[in-house]
Image (cartoon, rainbow, N blue to C red):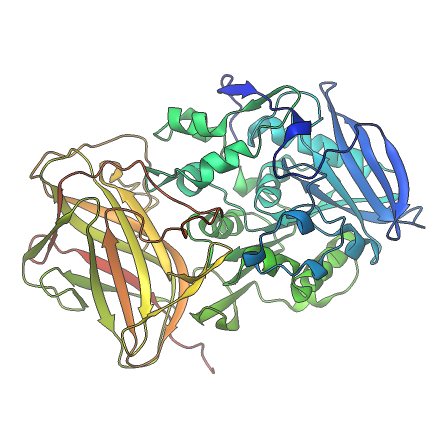
Length: 557
């Protein structure tokens, strides 16, 4: 993780006591009380190495005086912002699952306290009432988190070990602090957190994300001082440069035991980065679960908490648990929303995968194993949508990474933004819905995006099923110039019965959009470069094709 070269764009903090849609901010004074079977210390001051003071809330079992392992929840949304206050009804989270002390996206102190654990919930530097200016990930926040872990490891009632758990921001911070290897940090549990700021958070395929990113930026502006302006910084750096390098975690330097969780449903945010983090970690003991459910609901499910408990018991208390028999990889193979089978695997991507290429036929709207005759399709660059179908005549599983290669040209623009979806149709031709983005049940199998001017490939890192784009330069189009553009499709796992169809959708704008009037987080791309007519070519000298990962049954299954 490179050090910051200079100060990024910052802004004055917004008064923490005036935050809309947040519970009232408690007083800043230290408070100690017993509540719900816990000893609670609010606004404990932690002094960082440069003298800056930040604040945390500490929870521990009421009668515990020693040997208590501590779980750290580190995030910028306010240690007073509790999960049972903020989860939307469509998230699938049942409020009865949570105590009133559960931090947003973090571990429930009451549940963990009943099992002998402490929980620390921290407001980072510059967030809310903590001192200093807020830094959104990067070297400064990583060092601050490491200082905090060292402080927690020295608490007289602790056992000297600190673990980390949480969703989204609370997951991603673990990728930054773990490479610094603070001695008390004993175990990691990142539950769905992106690890590539440029490709997963801000610029999908080089196309700027314009809905979730500014919303996330607004959520981290509450401070007594200044905060990094994430939205303005992203817009100021449209190409991958030193700014994005400063946000890269050193995943290969992570050695702590790690239980990583991802979700097929989180297309456009955490899915890709969660898998990448697990894949690149150097940890000897690491496990990957990929489910297909709503992420917050899945985090707080009883069976999910019990798996976390088994993991932390093993590495924070040296106790024998089921973790010793866990498969290295566990996936849900989805059939539709709410219908899937769970399977143990040994690696990711699956070693027995067979990659097959299917050629697009723009004249017939089909995908075929045989190259098509030369043809072209013209569509409106903004509103146009076209589809290509592949019908199965036998039971089929497709699991892994996929890639679409398109030959395209434009008549009246110097660039082009491409939006791609994979869908499943039942035997009657109706779309089958999948859990999507934490709230929805009518989503796609998978998504992909690509700006044509960012079509350059990293030849060393790319494979036929997984194109990697450096995004460090633009190659603008000339009208009438036909170019080859490879689109990374985020990973997925889906089964098809005989008579069911895989549909490839190619469009000039977002294929899925949130419902009107429903203010839920959702990835959108409303600043495209599309104009006029887009031409898709197939066959002959322009073999547009889709590479898919077919998975045969496990031996002996």
